[in-house]
Length: 583
Image (cartoon, rainbow, N blue to C red; front, side, top):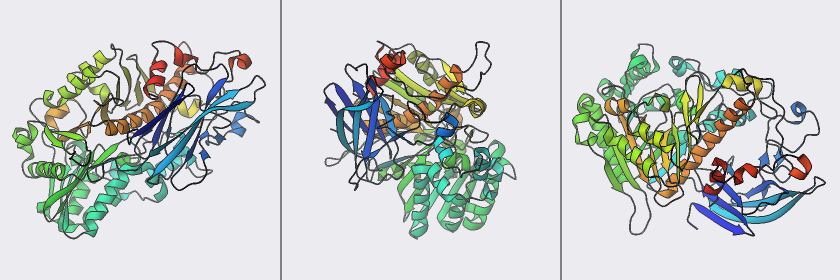
């Protein structure tokens, strides 16, 4: 057992745990599923607890009242009575305390009279410590689930989701700095670990007078972040993007720059767009002038970046990484127009973090703009082409990428027998890139009208994209696993014009973290695309309200194929899914 997975096989039943960031992926497989198998019950025991708690399901075999009365969308059916009819499940503990979690998985069977009975049972333990590599690297994700049932579960009773959403998020980005933040608990839930890491860095620097902070900001309209930056006074240096709408006199970025000019001084506040955009989202903390930690990634310092979109943040505490970003900031602060000609922009920078006594990932960094995008994008294309097991990705603007190594490698990927899931975003909805290379756009207006019971109408999260992550994971289940992430949009024009960072991490433990996040987003959206397709008529119009969703009973009772039958079709996507995440 490695420190990021645990597995056991008993009587043909396999269960595997994978460590994520404050979450756990549980994979199942059954060598020869009996006809009466109706799913898997899951229980967990958090650190310090004496008893197991069953994980709940939103749907059941039947309801004792009409679905709209019996089911309110809350996950209130114990999986001991309503087992999961999936071969994998992601558990995100509400309050993930550091330490060892124990999971109990059971095969659940249904007799001809409809009675449930437990079968083979496996218990496994795994450490869900929130820090991937202490003293080297911590990873955080935003929740990114405003368009979800989990968000609706937290909307106050009697309040419509769209009304509550507008209370949380300003309808226009230029109103962000004036928007009151009154729902503290909800902002903390939505921001999740990524945003808690941002505020942790800001608060640490505020509290330690021998430290200073350098900041690259693109979108900047989160009022609490700006307030902390103001409190740093002359211990702050910042570069704020001034491209497009950001240059307007009434933009939050211009207003923030004006306020910080007063608090920090005009010589410590710069506006820049390199050769296109200043697209970094970076905090660099220095102690007595020496960089000692850096936060980077895709999370903008804005309402949407922190509380609506799927985003990731990386906090590096390795001195070589902090020093590298410190040098990038100096170049971007002093001479952004000539950054592309600097040594920083013309090669990948490799940092080994493992020592003789402690493991650590191999890190590669590439900074743009640079003259030729192949420098940064060819390694991604090469990794996708060389993948033997799987490719999982969240690429925010994939639909806008029409050339280059990434574009060509993804086109080739769809023709290869390599398991792949992907999600992109469009202004009009979500684009779910399916394993056969086709796509399905998720229309939130459809969901609001046609969501089947027990799923309720969802809030779209307001105008603008929701999947803002930019990462690619190859072969997460192999020692050769790789992750590409950062602020880069992974486009040819962006790499040749924008101030951005791209990170390659060679480490299976980190790859698993990103793979689980990719699954969460994919499952969240793929279900909706399937539902939309199922209830669209042949002429393309949307049909009537769908029937309630129910768990499937065995064939001998229902007369229908078993719920698991599609997972055992040789060469199918579902067979690959079942095998990949459980072995």
